[in-house]
Image (cartoon, rainbow, N blue to C red; front, side):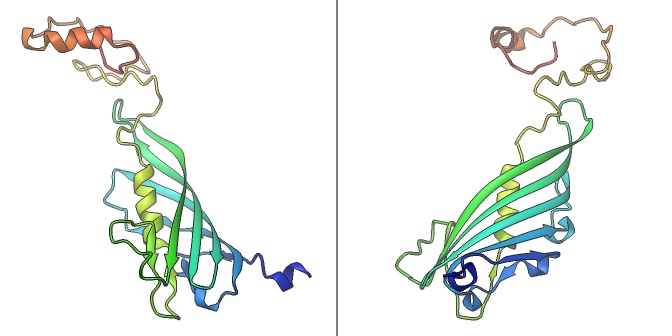
Length: 193
């Protein structure tokens, strides 16, 4: 039996987001691989505090009689502004996520976003929503250019990663003394002193 007869793998290279729809109903049962190189402008993420420069998505589609299991690996180049020192920097985010599609209504739970009801035959599966949702979940809550970023001087505003300032440390307001003590006792806390 040849690879073509078993229909194990199909590689499709696609170039735009409109093509991120997979018509699983036209695929034979088995494993199929789809690769997408995407333009980020179609993801509607312009109002975020980052900009995406490149997205590569590889999807492994395992199709059965009633079910389709899609595992996706996304690699994204992103430009951020550091929350501590306000420097513009680039980073690469990688994520892997899976979604199980089924025509069995009993399997689908309304509180599980990883299990989706397959719609009528002929309607393709759109990967856009899963990609956008998982991409947003990979963005860190606190964006820093490096783990040892020193941030900005609270008095003069100089970037403490690039230069040392000569500002005098002012006395701590007594209402904040407890927090100052906690900061000094906690190793690894990224605060400007």
